Image 1: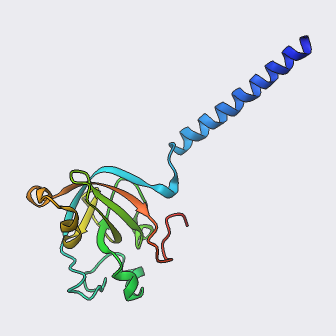
Image 2 (image 1 turned 180 degrees about the vertical axis):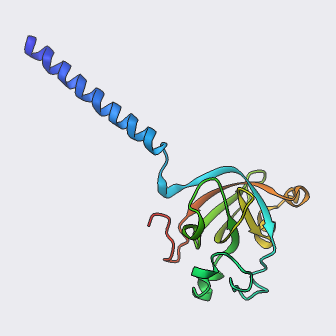
Image 3 (image 1 turned 120 degrees about the vertical axis):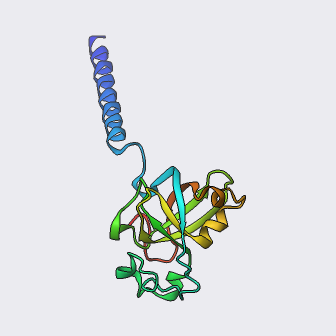
Length: 165
């Protein structure tokens, strides 16, 4: 009987340690997956990159990422609309270049995938005007001068900048 009681106590102690380790890991990682970075209620303004009129040329618009991405194939540069990125969650500088975001207008639910080609200073996104219009389906963003959006880093689907590399 005494042996059974010691076994149970030992098993309980082991389960408690496992639980504490899991709790510690969850706290250290913030409970979020690194490959699924996202942010909610982010400020999104607009900028006139006019990629179609500029031949999807990153150098022509003086985009920060042109140093690394201007010579990517036309199909890569023109696959998605463009944005500057300075959001609260995600990579910064060169590490953000070429990554893709799924951007959702909080008010209307309209969504679009964009490629990061530039930096900004507004603490959120600076979407190309054409992209901004796509998700400003009720015109309230234009009237306010900005949208409130959620964004999530997503795989671009072109073999270049998968989020889980």
